[in-house]
Image (cartoon, rainbow, N blue to C red; front, side, top):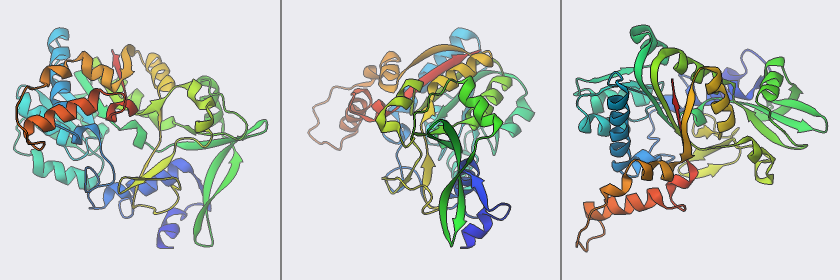
Length: 346
């Protein structure tokens, strides 16, 4: 009840984005504010970064190529940088790059300070606004890996000819849903980005994605925005598998359908709408350089060049681990099949 009292202190019912923001980022109860391990084997979920350092190594080489061939400032800004594992590999292999980390989570912020403070070319900020105030407009690269999927979203549901927004409220100590009329801003989003929502279907309204992308674009004088995440296209919304939307939780590597449970104890995530992010990019003077599956992207930047020949029989040798990781990155059945890579240029 203590959580519920804090959550509904201003209103008897709140939209989903307010609930998610509280569950993930509240300084007292939020998932990303507590000190439990979140990433890797002992956490709640894996990212590609934690499969093998070769992932960050090859992307770092690609970043260096973009900087060199486009005469950009050697600055990488990673937003939502987690425990700093990606940054560490980049810094170890690219001493001439300045690496700027933006990490909202107090827990991960402290982890990064301990892990990366010895690098003179590393800076960390709590929010993008802090970075913008220092650097104004810059030429370089803005990178994120599973950032947008963690942004709070609104939820809508269509019943007959009417689209409602889904709110949550406290009902005798239990958090439950209720439907309310959609606001103009939600209705404008649906119309602007041409979302077709079938009768009985739910979907997410990703207003925060638009704000974040606009902030990136405004801060970038010239350069690239590289986004890795899992998502869908508008046509996928019509598939029966999307009837209940994509909002879900992850706890100890298990998918949790009921995101209203275990408030503050699990990650909450939803799929990015790539059509919205691409269209919003054009509105912010961002052209699409490429959009493809993660395994296609990794192959295009030379991941197979990292394969090593070896005669070691030990499956736990470094050579075996490397080759096994590369295989998991490039196979359609591996980790990359869940992720796409969007590269936008200004």
